[in-house]
Amino acid sequence: MPNSTPVVVVRELTSHGYNADRDAVTLLADEPDPARAVEHVVEHAPADVLTISAAQVRDALKARGDDEAADASGARNDRPGPSTDAASPTAADDTADTAEQNAPDAADHTTDHTDDNPSEPTISSGSEKTTSSSKASGSAPETKGVSEGSTGVSDALDADSIGEFERAVDETLHEVRVANDITGQSTGTGDYGDFVSVFRDRYDRLSSKLRGRVNHRPTNALESMGGGSEAAIVGMVNDIRSTASGHWLIELEDTNGVFPALVMKDRDIAAHVDELLLDEVIAVEGSLAQDGGILFVDSLHFPDVPRTYEPNTADRHVQAALISDVHVGSQEFADYAWESFARWLHTEEAEHVEYLLIAGDMVEGVGVYPNQDDELDIVDIYEQYEAFAEKLKQVPGDMEIVMIPGNHDAVRLAEPQPAFDEELRDIMSAHDARITGNPSTVTVEGVNVLMYHGVSIDEVIAEHPSESVSYQAPHRAMEKLLRKRHVAPQYGGRLRVAPEEKDYLVMDDVPDVFHTGHVHKLGVGTYNNVRLVNSGCWQEQTEFQKSVNIDPDVATAPILDLDTLDVTVRKFEN
Ligand code: D5M
Ligand code: FE
Ligand code: ZN
Image (cartoon, rainbow, N blue to C red; front, side):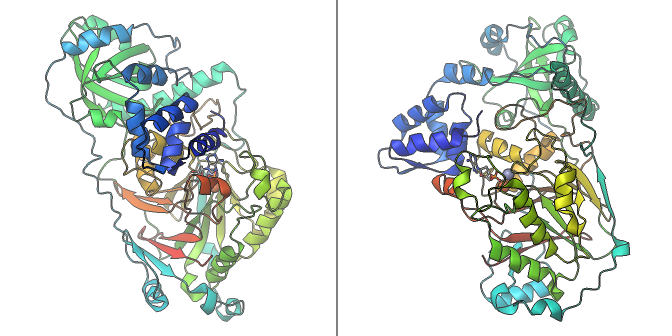
């Protein structure tokens, strides 16, 4: 899908006199035929509505009828799967409707625990200093248990204050290790064969996490098992469609072929079908139809994170600032806010902040989105990095900086993205930052931080039917990625995946902290004891963002205690 689609959607809607929520635009842009989808929405929109919501889009698209929706979802996937012969041997569509009438009435059973996972993060209010500083400012709002300690930067921190406090950082204690970085390892030649390898590797690694939990059979052995037998499949989601009667048909693919699995619409597990993405790996258990040609699903499993996961923590009280989306070079770059942040890092309140992790979009880039040029302050990409390097120089020299690229940065767009090349490293060399790929696992004093820019978050939000997973709560989307144990499952759409021998986007090990950005909204949460942080941005609202009602969280810096994984959000004036 071209990047310009959301812009076209917004234009179309405004030409019909409508504004739209960001989630609504994303949903429409992700439709196979966005123009037609907009027409449907306009037809179905209540007369008195000015701003179209995501719920209204969903209602309108639902009203189109199952046939069209099924066609549409069938058209989405064109990548090769883990089986060498990707062609579907089963006439799943034809068998589905007759088969579902014979479905057994087994009790619903699922081992996945989304619903009872606490969605509210349990985050401490941070240090005494933060609390008192937020009281002193009198304006720090408390959101979701995250304490937003206003630093009162404008009055308390003038330029002179930098000199007042002497940081006493013992750099010999610093410890940063990087793993799972594509940089220098890329083997992709762009051949079809590389796509086959990357998906096969994904299947191998994710299926191994599920195999011990179900008694699965290879897809090509199922048909001979006999009607009515209990069976399980571990497969990659090849296709999802709704049948004429509203049930769900999931086509699963393993290294031997594909097999259809049917989830009845009235089962509890049907809710999980809504959150499936193409190309993720799941397990299903159930029973085979009388003719053996379809599996009726009773339970569905994600690779997931164990509920009892015990995260690693640092041995001493030390903190990391988790930021992203600086967008230097944009006219909307929040220069003043950055200055406040940098000055604050030199104060006593920040004495334990010894690491700065930056999850992509250092600069605004050039030609990333249509008409972006109109909003550029610096038009040359190298000059943008030079300006960014100046911003880094304001960060205390004793801090360790780690950075990965994002979709605005000058590296390949397809994920995994390698780290900045030599020329860019040279430009940014003043601070001697650790420069690594997107994604990377960065171990900071024993704490494994999975850094990923976050383009797939747009996709997860667009595909997820519930309002709980939205731009207001990006950490809920991160939770879904953790369950899938993959940072960007769905190939195609807005996300480009590079063909490689190995799938660097698989989460082999459970991270202790998952750090993303990209959507320019702050989100802090936990999922099975894994700390989730989506940092905000340092760019004020752009024209595009205005047109889709994106209200970015500008100038916030989540500060992570590496010894407890508590997070305190610092808000700077912008
Ligand atoms: O994107 C920041 C957020 O805004 C992310 O959710 C994508 C969305 N965005 C911003 N500009 C556009 C355009 N022009 N088309 C589609 N989506 C957009 P970032 O990539 O960090 O700027
Ligand atoms: Fe960004
Ligand atoms: Zn981005």
